[in-house]
Image 1 (tube, rainbow over the protein chains, first blue to last red):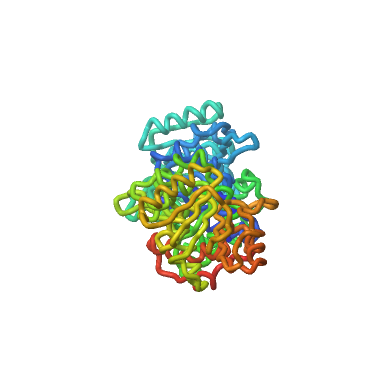
Image 2: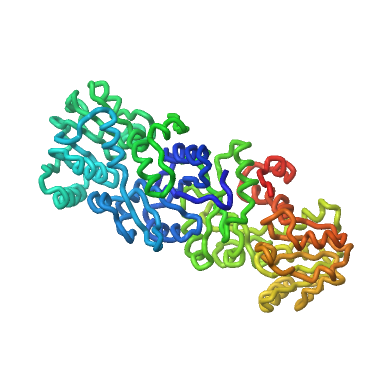
Length: 277
Length: 277
């Protein structure tokens, strides 16, 4: 029940229609008697830099979940960026600290890697292609790098964006092999779609699925449906796959800790979730 | 259930802790399967002029309920003010029209007058003292004037504010008798506390209760508890009284119509409300 004492977690992005987090967080808060709610706010990119600071001046704001297209833009609005933000250049969680400073962190990559490990896949020493170097792709690439992949491939139709991410990763992980400029999935152990392709019916595939190694692990960030056409095609080739919601479920425990809520496991969150595709 | 398709009605004011509207609107929306929720947002007075326009740029905003201390400040932020706003100089409801213009209306006074009439009291021809000429007091005074009171008394510790309200009422209701400068309730048929006195324990009485006519109708805008000490004292004198929540219930049907939701009666809203003092 929302009341005058309810603390808000703003869920910031557009379009809001594909948001899934409220269907997990809010049943969790309700079941635990926590007087907080995740509230989607469809903020336009052009308004975001003005809106975020004002949002955090509300007396009943507890934090923000940040999603497309604001993850990169958020970094410049923070007073303090945690290590995952510095490395990825992207932020998906914001809170105010005791001194009133805006603090940001990034949990997409952690969620992706935790999900891989739960499925029994080794990350360390593998070779991973991340297609899309925007907010979520940057976070995944950074976490894969930190988890010890031997080589990482970065691709974005905006070449400069992929090159800048490569530069940041080189600074933080000097021994990491980095390749840019190709989205050919042949020869990679891990292939990730971190583009919005799949959000709209009729979107093209993010990579040439026929060239994915059947032994590869294929992950997805799009959450509009349980299994996107891309994942279905990869699964048909024999690949082990990870849906977007897996990344989401695996990162929420880190989010809850960041916001100062009682701990939860991803299994507990799955049990209570009202996410139905 | 809040989801990515939920339309927001922002409830704007501070402090939020005394807000009661979410406990009425949200059970109503749920029971009717309407994908909208009232969400309290504790916006500070100094941020409001910047925050309101940005709030209305969100893709999923449907409207705003405006309360203390923003009702008067809202008027200057509107593109179009409905008649009750022009007359009262106060606004408690904002929406965007088809052309993207911010349109404001004011329903407090209508709620107060409807509540009086439901209790069988005549408004026309009576003499009414409204103590407090801020947002809600202005709205009540304007509606009482429109409903045909013979004379109205306006009092505010900020004299200029009461005088400006008197001036607006004179312009819109040329035949109305208006007195300002005294909060002595003796001789008035209707006495309204439209100040925040009563929101905090130990607040002084808004008027000298011992001088209220036992035949007077005594109303209240404070909603923090069902019966404020002021109303309890008036009732002890034999007065018929109206609690703050009555004004709220009686105005919500007008609000719902303004926002374009299906019609509801105040009795239907009372039946589903989770307001428990």
